[in-house]
Length: 302
Ligand SMILES: [Fe+2]
Image (cartoon, rainbow, N blue to C red; front, side):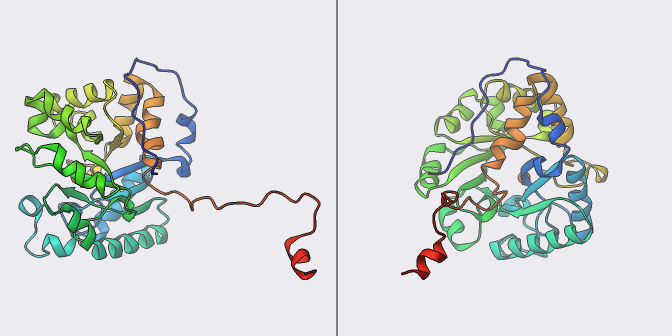
């Protein structure tokens, strides 16, 4: 059974210094960003490979070592681009190919960031079929977790869609719950999604006020209440190119100062590590030599 990320307990301010503060400076222990738009030319992120590289370099500078590319999928109304229809541009095979190309370019330029394939999937009655046919992707293409997005200004009941995804064996992560209109106007709205075991991913930009005070307040309240499992960038541009840049470092600083370094670690490192495979799964090992004959000796003597 998949190990599920923990959410931090309801927070008390704890500003003690955690060892991760120094260890995040080592790239392999860096932050893990589960929601971004880093791939070129397929949704509302960078238009060119060069812009993607600038965005990736920005993430690496902010101590992000792994990022999941999550182009909008099944989101035909908001983000379809006439020159590159969404359902083709963000098909699983296109995403996999672009991730491979971007990773090799990052390696060639010495930028220490690994990109993984994924999607930010708009909820739809056809979501299971879309995941089966490649119109939508699970996080890291591993069929363990799916990042879903809701329409911004209409409400959808959680139960039906979540039960279908859970029945398919998927953990469900809701992107930026703090940004939906219903989250602001109806206190029961997010409770319903949480009640159905949906994990919440808050945007780093929300935490630092990029979407305004109301969204920032709700983002911090959700973290305070222990309702959040992940912080991610949802970056569309490098910080230097304007709005919606990765605000990971600024958000981590604010969370550390408000709630403590252990919360930064849980939401940006420990929980995302359960989503992003950082190494090969461990293989069963034989016990160390007990002074007995080796396998080959045993086999030869038979
Ligand atoms: Fe997004």
